[in-house]
Length: 387
Image (cartoon, rainbow, N blue to C red; front, side):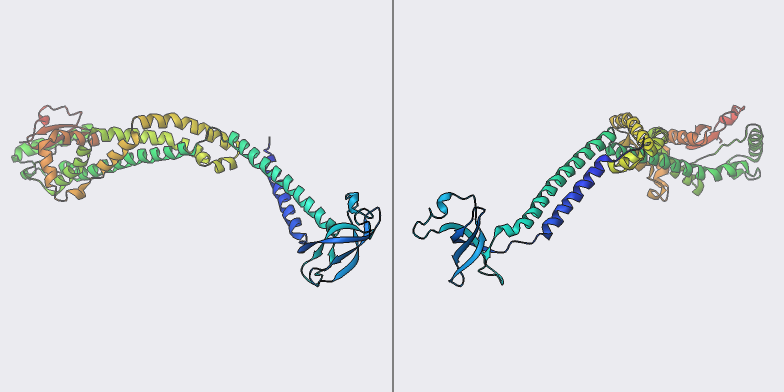
């Protein structure tokens, strides 16, 4: 059923009547300035038609003119009772006090048309104000009933939560990608290692050839095999870049990965609800939405409320924001990598723990070194630190 804006039409009609009242009032000529005077009634008929005499207050002379006296005034004011000697009566009237008719007798009966206009203007104003009030009040009540359950603040809070959740997931992904980029050249270098160069692993030529051969054989069997020595005593640019990138994840701690996973899941859950709830971001936009859009928006707002309540109880927005801040402490804060190497020596297990999370491989630690070992490695000796 199509919505009929009844109260909108009522409001419009009320405003039109108010406008007509104002226009009619402005079109009515103003009364001239008048001065009240006493009239001597020389003769009078029962219907009030009379001849009167008065003293012109401006020229100070007596004047006579026909007039319409008040026929319903008390009989004592009429002839012959008012003045038994002269037989005249008495009444009161007005003369014009400005313009070319100054001093002329003015009959209020001449303003009957103006009075009718003013009377009609007043009635139109009363009717217009009444209809306007009905339209405004009724329209607001109807609008409130149509928007019941909508709360723009809920949508704003959900957007803030979604932004914080999505941002922490992006920041963690950026930190992880930095580790992967730093790890990639080390990974490639190990598979392409030259057996004739014993300096790459710090062992004799025979041992190098044997171990590289084993590594390449395992790479062919399980995909890839890597043993990388990260020596704090002999840092070089590529290993330093890896340590610096890992330090971001180490400093952020295990909660960073958890927060990123929770943030990604929460953002994915909030996104469709926010899309449906978009019309409920403002009462005006909700009123302008179609019936199906309004129904989906109200349902989405209802679904957002428990999610927001739980997230606020658990302080999710603050947690996501803090993790994002921790993840933004990137390599720029340690360009030489010295402090990262010092930190690595004090808690190397955490570093290769984060590297294992990023690369998805098993890791073992040697003295002052990290070695990456494939999960499916069939050789036990390959897990031993390279001398």
